[in-house]
Length: 77
Image 1 (spheres, helix red, strand yellow):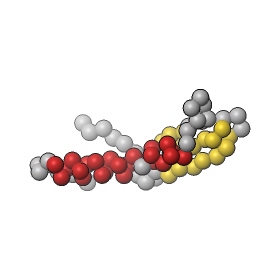
Image 2 (image 1 turned 30 degrees about the vertical axis):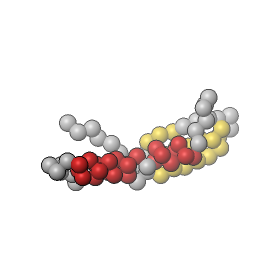
Image 3 (image 1 turned 135 degrees about the horizontal axis):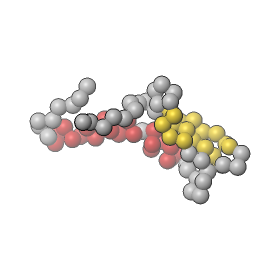
Image 4 (image 1 turned 45 degrees about the horizontal axis):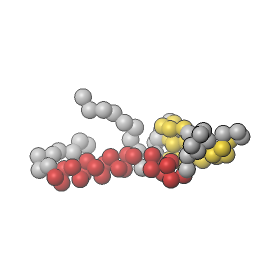
């Protein structure tokens, strides 16, 4: 069984929340929340949110790279 994930694109929304610092929300293509952060002890940065939001594209790039190394590889569509 292949693990499922929320396909991209994922988008980022950032706001200042009273008492929480900067809050980042990452949404999937159907506007469902994928990740929500708060200021917490280690406040997140936009770079963190950008890296998380790039996950679907990174997964596709890794699949392509893997198939370049494995001649028998077939990509799922």
